[in-house]
Image (tube, rainbow, N blue to C red):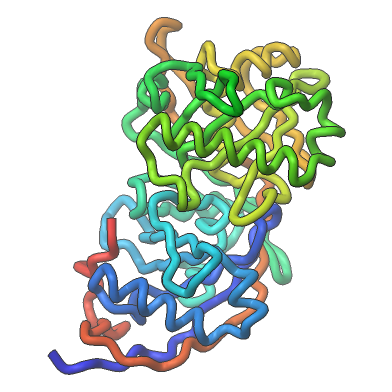
Amino acid sequence: MNATIIRARAAHLVRAEGAPCPTLVVDAGQLPQDDEELLEGLARVRDGLDTVTRQAVLKNAVIRPSSHPLFDLDYYFVQSLPGGRHRFDTRGSCGHSILAAVEAAARDGMIPPLEPGRRIRVNVLNNGDHVVCEVDETGPGRTRFTAHFLCTPSRPVGDLLITGEPVTSVPVDGRAVPVSLVDMGNPYVFVGAGDLGVRDARELFAAGDELFGLLGKVRLAVCEHMGWVSSGAFPKIAALLPGPDGELAVRAVSVPSWHPTLALTGAICLGTAVGIEGTLPWSLARAAGHESGLVRLRTPGGPLRVRARITGPADAPRLGWVSVADKYVSHEATVTPPLGSFDTPAPSRSEDTSCLSLPL
């Protein structure tokens, strides 16, 4: 097959407030269709960034207008891992990057212009999530969203417990550490910071390498217990403490360091876990005085509010949706990817891209 030239269509660097780095948003139409070559194409786009930006920006979103009648945008998340241009993890998603993708898509005309009240429906190709990004406010240089993660149809909350149990113990340094493994938005390991020797939120937020390393050991123990690959970005892990007036203090690990706040998918997953009886988040939230409804989280970078809609009888609850409000997104830069050749033709904007086979 004759090699074809990747088109030099602009990509975008967009930052969601609270994310550890901006997201590089790339139009799927400028990348090859083959699974492996798509990632090679993305690596070449990243090669066009300056060295400092390339090393700092570890989140990538590949997007296209959705051909599905229920969605506006197809989104595929690729996490760059330190240590090489081809080190990627595609097994999860990123809520902050979804919002960044919506901002970039509007700039490129893939979706209508963003205005208050508009809702953009996003199909997450990595894991099948359905996300509605509701525009609350627009202004010079940034947009404020509420992100709604939908379960259509609603899901039994027990299905979100990875081990089928609200609490699982894993061996760490010769002792059993209780954790809750929950999968909503992304798979998360939730651990009580008190079980790791942390006394209060001030100490949790000030902790450095020792606690970071200990959380890494807990995550590794979970991966070994579940038979998972531990070298990628997933599962995520977060440590929790009860705070005053029903508030939960939370500190999470990102790639490759502490998260400055909490991933949007982390807030979604934690808000869900608080509503599942018997989990560590459920127990710790109740120790803080939380009963039901809006969950207030305190992170090193400030507060978050998350609300999970759980319905049905007490013995068979189901999750309908989870929402996080007040997420600001700013466009930082437009970049022109370098030209390169591939063995798989990339469709032009005028061609039908409805059959473009992004990896699943």
